Image 1 (cartoon, rainbow, N blue to C red):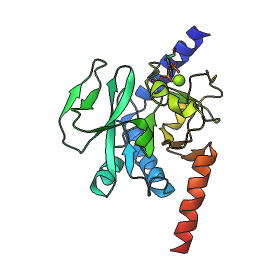
Image 2: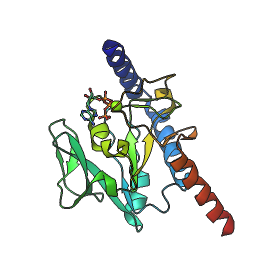
Image 3: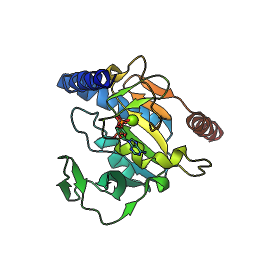
Amino acid sequence: MIQNKQASRAALRQRRRLIPLADRRRFNDAIQQVLLDSGLLRRAQHIAGYLANDGEPCIAAFTQRCEQGKQSYYLPIVKKQRLLFARYQTGDLLINNQYHIAEPIAVSTLPAKFISVILMPLVGFDHQGNRMGMGGGFYDRTLSFIRRKPCKQRPLLIGIAYSLQSVDHINRRPWDIPLDAVVNENGLLLFSNKAIGLLRKTKSAQQMN
Ligand SMILES: Nc1ncnc2c1ncn2[C@@H]1O[C@H](COP(=O)(O)OP(=O)(O)OP(=O)(O)O)[C@@H](O)[C@H]1O
Ligand SMILES: [Mg+2]
């Protein structure tokens, strides 16, 4: 079972890295357009994303728009096996962490609970909102408060992926935190009532304007 998961993780990561550059550019543009059109982030005050690594979709153009608007943009930094979110603006100084992933030099950080939307990279996703990450458990550990009832305040979790990262089924383990939605180059997939409710609100606000 564990071997299976490791093998499919490796195969999916390789598939993601092998996307030809021209396709990758086209897919990245489409993903960012879907994010923009969805309106899901329009009212979000604190948005966390990531810097693309290992063939992950690059969302830098989208996140620069957030930085330039009234929204605050954050990148994850690893602290004691969990993630904190550090304010980031393009051009800020970055430093490689122990996993060779660039992080901002944290001046001010926010715990996950106070982030409005987290744009999460992933290795694989299924159509029930299950997410396979890199296997460190960092996002799951960071977001474990969501499993505690009642959880009044929590971020909307949007997986960012290429469609070729879609798999039939991912076993949800007790510690896994499911996604509210996935954005890929073909569109938006909604999994939770939180995401569906937010989208409805956005659409009815658009109709009233
Ligand atoms: N809340 C938690 N508390 C303690 N350990 C955890 C927690 N969540 C995950 N882990 C540990 O992390 C390990 C990796 O988890 P998993 O395989 O789900 O990673 P992943 O979801 O692919 O990675 P990530 O969340 O970093 O993207 C698990 O074996 C589990 O023991
Ligand atoms: Mg997990």
